[in-house]
Image (tube, rainbow, N blue to C red; front, top):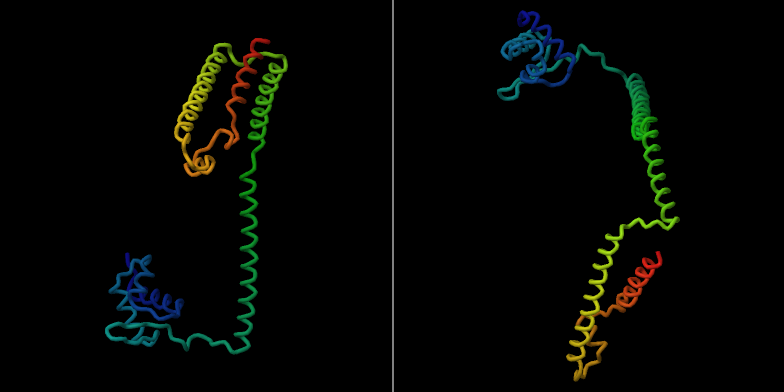
Length: 226
């Protein structure tokens, strides 16, 4: 149930005095919605308070601006203003200190949250121990000369490797035949011509077909040795 007229006036008067700033009826209506006061009731209360001299008002065109009467407030002198400024400065300093303290605590909380719990540490340690054991077992097998790659897998890999080497050798030969035919009667410097075309030999990029052939032969010798 909405407050009675006199109750509404008391609510509006208290609000206007508390705000102590220029207000229109809409400002007051928006702020006092929690009291279930209609805008018409608020407008009437403002007018009654203004007519009775309890609040001040000014008209700007069709709009009325209401303000608390300033003669009801004590105006501080220069000494009191200085004290208030000092108190305000002290409170602001305390607020800044509190903000810094809150920031430090929040930082500590984030650090603690990022750390592993005891249970997580134990689980991680167990996982690492298992990995180390598996690596040690694998190392022992390698030291003991145990072949970790199955013979059929090794054979398949060697066949693929051999095929790639053969393709490499074939393409080198094809290029050489073609290059010799192109440059046989060319008056150009062959190195400059090669650079002009953007051609690179294996040696230019630090690779050698022979080294890969030797690697394959070395692997076969090791297999026969075992």
